[in-house]
Image 1 (cartoon, rainbow, N blue to C red):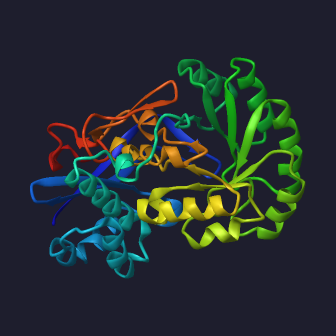
Image 2: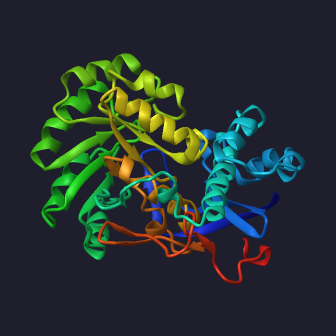
Length: 345
């Protein structure tokens, strides 16, 4: 297989703020694998919280270029298993290659990826749209500027309940909240009561990932479902989250791609947990892959392309939460015309 890496740095529509950081640009890396005249695209994200930068992603992949380019794709699962010992310290890099392999594999079979898995897309969940932390006035303006059926609202401020009250005054849409590890046990339990009255569906990652004792106290007493994000990174974390969370948010970038995500979904369902996939602010190149998992999910947060002012590829589209698949085989993602290294910042 021929390997090509495309680094990007894309602008956000608005400064993107969560409880621990703000950013105006999202660095990304797109990997392309070509074999027998067909190509597959995969994507992964730069993320400071996990010490992952695009230069590190590129360097770690480049160490294994010879292995990748001498590999003949049979199945993506087998490819992932061969790559895992080489890239187990960089699951973000492994993700880009795994998604590209699945895209290529489906194209070889002239099928959309969900068709490869025999999935029915007729009852797909809707994606939410994220409102990042800002002044209450600005958060209301962002909501009003983007009418949507489901909002994910970033919290972790001294005005969290006031924020939700202000937003609720302007919409009857479903609300989900994400504290990104910013709360303590008592704050979570107290906030959950108020948030439930305001029509919030669930709370994502209220406590720091290391506070398992605190999460047990929350789980046993909270009046809203709690979903794991930072507490659920790789496959081994699914079992650890059982009894601490009502569900898990799987992010392809963090867990190493589609191959482990499929196993994580199956394990969580066996344990009676809800399953969601989330966004690391990927562009359409990576988000198109998430779309093919929708029939397996309870919730989805795949709004990365909506939050970015720029894109890397064509592929899936989103209309009022509904996902419209591209016409092509595989994930449906295709690099935008004219994308070359001269376009990268």
